[in-house]
Length: 98
Image 1: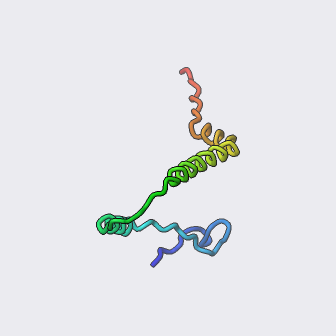
Image 2: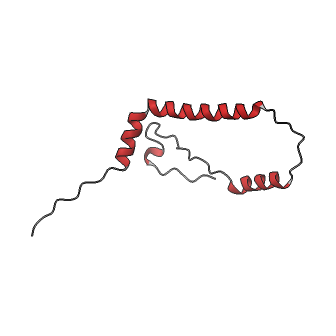
Image 3: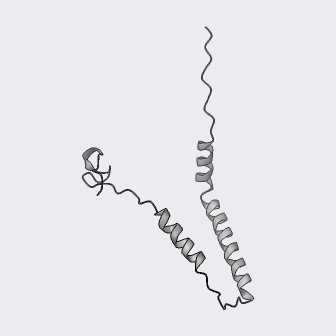
């Protein structure tokens, strides 16, 4: 059972009267149990890794790297403004002589 919505007008700013949904937390115990089960019941695999697999992995890694660099290039001004805003020093209060 969900707790009643206590926000004004019963909802969000853009949709009054409609309750706002909270994101669900991942069930950590379930994920841990699934991971443990997967690790405990490991069966040997008769698998063959083709020599081209290394090339494919390298292409994927380089593609992701260059994609991230390109995205950084496109959004550089926003990233720079965000970093400067986060790490900006606040001015010291003026000293009063008294």
